[in-house]
Image 1 (tube, helix red, strand yellow):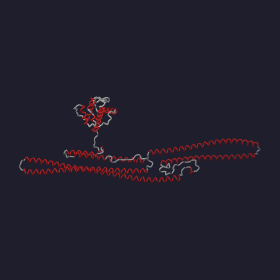
Image 2 (cartoon, rainbow, N blue to C red):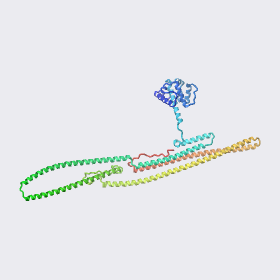
Image 3 (cartoon, rainbow, N blue to C red):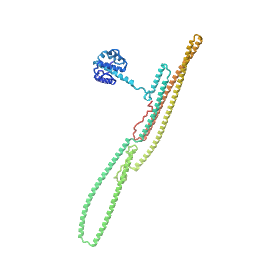
Image 4 (cartoon, rainbow, N blue to C red):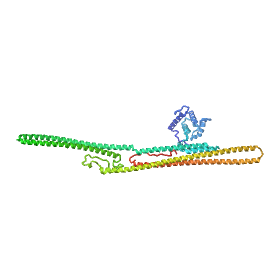
Length: 555
């Protein structure tokens, strides 16, 4: 057959020469070697490399013929698939461009063969640990049957060591299963604790998102409040400009009044007024002055009262705004804002304050008494009902967990009972085997004695020939009976061993099925509990992981 390898490809030759050089150096080749040497090797170099590689496969081989005549037979002995392509002429002209590619491919094949053999020789064998071999039972039964059959063919009827090894391995397997069950139970408890922790604690991402939304809402409200203060500032500035203009107007009016007063004073000075008129006018002036002072005092009291009321009103509005902000913050945390939140039911709980409203009912954006308060009362009632329902489910889950715990304990008791039964069967089998061995030994002793007696009787001569023959026949009959009895004991022991093996296999299948059923039941209960808890508490939370606990991984 044609070699499918690209033997004449330069890159393939370069890679193969490099790999062969590294392999020779690593394996202790005792001659100078380099990639340049293998580009155009001499016959001496090739022979040295071939003998070094072949010695790795057969260290005791001694070359008896000429190298060129002996190599084709060695390659056929190694089952080299392209041995017919290696001719003696190529071995005589190793470095030629027609010979070297085929010889290089042959050396590469021998190098790969050495690597494979070395891996097989140094591969880790089965260490007898139940958890390290997936087909543990098949391995043990195969070893036991192989050793027993070899002993049977060799005529050895003593299987005690092999059965003891098999018993030890199965005890190790049972110990390993118990360790795995304990380990899985601990993992289940740890996973349940982690699950409870994930369910009871709000997700950090959801909490951060809620905090972000609250801060965003607060930012919008502070921006709105700043805009309100800016508009208020603009209004105050407008009022200040208006007051300034009014003061200027009043000053102009005062100047005009001063001028009118001067004109009136000149007119008065020019008029002829009697003392009575002067006294009357002075009295009227005093009265007007008193009335003016009284009016000014009253105006000051009114302005002071108005300013205090305005300050008190502003404080009340600030308190109301703070309460509204707190309400909106709590409502958002509870999932009531926005209106499409899980618990909002389409109701707008976000209250906005209008400080410029002219009527009280227009100061808030939502009717608190007729809308907000009834909705909150209904929400509290629903949450109380959900809380009671959740507590009932928690009680049911705890009962299911207790039931599962009892089931596991029952299975462990059943496993222990089966182990005791196996131990009793093994002990019974050993006792019966020892009894059979004792009988076999006694039979062999008796047969030896009978043979000695037969020999003695033959040596006594011809006297009593008839009696001797009868005695021989009797002894032969007894020997045949003992041999038949021994064979029956062997068959009975073999059947007993097969029965014990069948019971062990049946027990293994029973344990695997029980553990599988227990695992499925635990998974169903866990999935049901997970869905129940998520439907009540996890409406806005995120579960991180789903628990899958294989309870029969060791099997």
